Length: 321
Image (cartoon, rainbow, N blue to C red; front, side, top):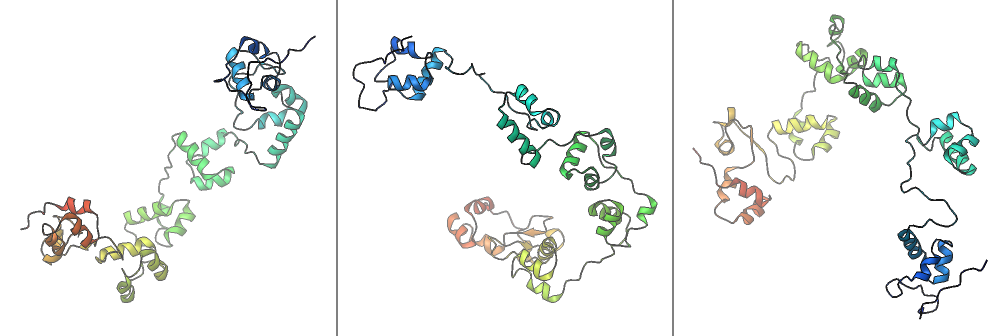
């Protein structure tokens, strides 16, 4: 059988240069070769690129030579990467079912055995579903051998709430130890223990530390995080104490001043005059308001170290009594 001869089409351009479709359109003679030979052979004979030949072949609707027709959309592997199938079938059966080569089957089996490919978690049993909500999620996670997030998601999926009523013997323990220790003892959260203890009016075992004069004087000199490490207190406790004392943050854009007097009325007029009724703190002093109207918004913002938007929100100045 005679092989098809290369098709010439006038000037083929420079030596070794692939011909473009814009300069050299496809001819009927060239279309006869597409689909009869491999794409690489057609590209070599016609001096065209491989991608150009593949695009033309797909346009003509012809299958590639040397392989069967491929599906338009490949089926995706399951999330467990056929772990259940590998656990029940031999390599020969897997080759027949999946159409994989022997090397690919053996490689996937090694990956599943080494744990490089995450397997799907075990299915939830009826006994596990029955225990959901009876104990804290962290305790059940240890008993089931699952992660805490998996137990929480499963419980929410089943619409199960953790409702653990307080027994008289549980309430007798409140106040005898710290809330954290009682939470571990009763299988509850420390917050749940603290709320129920305060509801019954039982004082905590560990009373809060009294703030010393040195600690009070250091508030505002450094950030709350740094002072919390120095004082060995929580950041929330340092921040709450600083705000209660009316001390602003260091290097703050604007100062937060505590209002003197009940509900923002009376007391020191220098700090209470600009506060709304019922406010505990204010951010504008009488000196700041005195700048409004005398300078432009941009100049006032630069003097106060804040944004122009904050100055414009303050305008017009509210009526003072």
